Image (cartoon, rainbow, N blue to C red; front, side):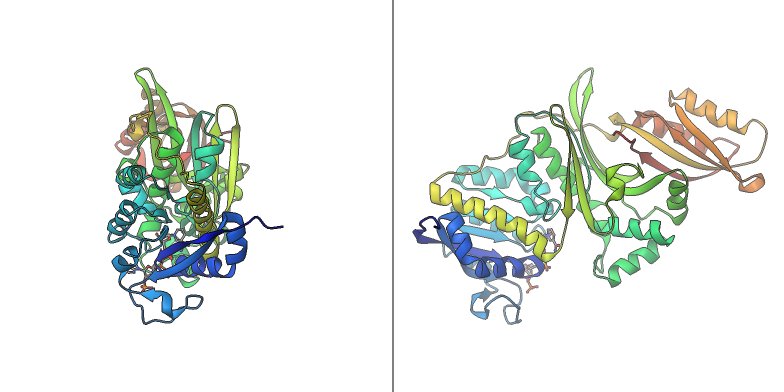
Length: 436
Ligand code: NAP
């Protein structure tokens, strides 16, 4: 028998009736009876805020639509679901909702990665929930496990593929030998990439997610501006071919890690194209899927995998937060707030430990290999393998290093640029190992 349902329904206002918003309204409506049994009160959608309230939207009753979003907040909703995207007016509306005593659920990574501290403070002051499971890796339950299930462990590193668009493009480049531009056009034609792909291909979307993951993993405030970002525009078909030849896939990885330095611990948060061994589980993550590896001291490696985007998958994560917030309202409790007690410094990317792949075109002269190796040695960068491809004017060197300090490897590459026998640096990319 289903548990008794409290007589007082909870009102839910949805700001945004687009790809995700429409699915959220549909799931709240179609699943109303089950949700009521799970929550202990009925969830009633009382309004959906959009820009164009005159446009018909499948799944959203026309009577719920309005373009007056502040007026929706004046109705004193119990839960506000923000699915508009962007910073303004989302920030202002979310803040107003929290101050008015509503719990807020959002999927807006940019908002949380830039304004998270102020929003968390407003939620704490009002004693309401602010949750955003869908903001990172879509449907994949990731933030709640980080915040709750792993709360007793010490997380050392979070590493993952958190942008489906770039993963689709890189998968296509690998599978077909296509250029970046051709693979991007294909992704746009199939709806995997937006007409303006900047946020995805330049790494900003992944960077916002990396900031959120780092904040949760290390109990430290990390914002979008703290993240070192490099996107995938510069990844060439030649890079992909060279990587494949050496047994690697290229993935855009978001990395957040704890770095122990003599002066104390800090965190490094970065997004960059990375060579991933084909034997690594992240190499098997193809097309628009997402996957995140968490490495914790006691738990070891834990991997999360699934759909990182799409209306229905993302709505699933939003509904999870809505149910959690609704239960809290029924029982009079609230989610744990922001945990930023550790206040670790965010270190420059040069402090990170990583391995490099360096792809050079060199003049075919005696002593070239020794000269190149000498530059690595000068900076304390240790070579793991050096392979020569071709001869004469087309001679290329494919060099893999052992892990070393990013700053030393970067200095090595700078010096190689000025080395006489080096005709061109064809590519430089970071590398992760089999076990890392
Ligand atoms: P979308 O399809 O573009 O929908 C945005 C909705 O917000 C539209 O209904 C739009 O109204 C409304 N809106 C935007 N600005 C507004 C304004 N100033 N005033 C009133 N209404 C406004 O976006 P989406 O793909 O659903 O994404 C929503 C959020 O979820 C974003 O934060 C996004 O980053 C996040 N997210 C999306 C996905 C995904 O797969 N789509 C995955 C994870 C997270 P109109 O329809 O009238 O224009």
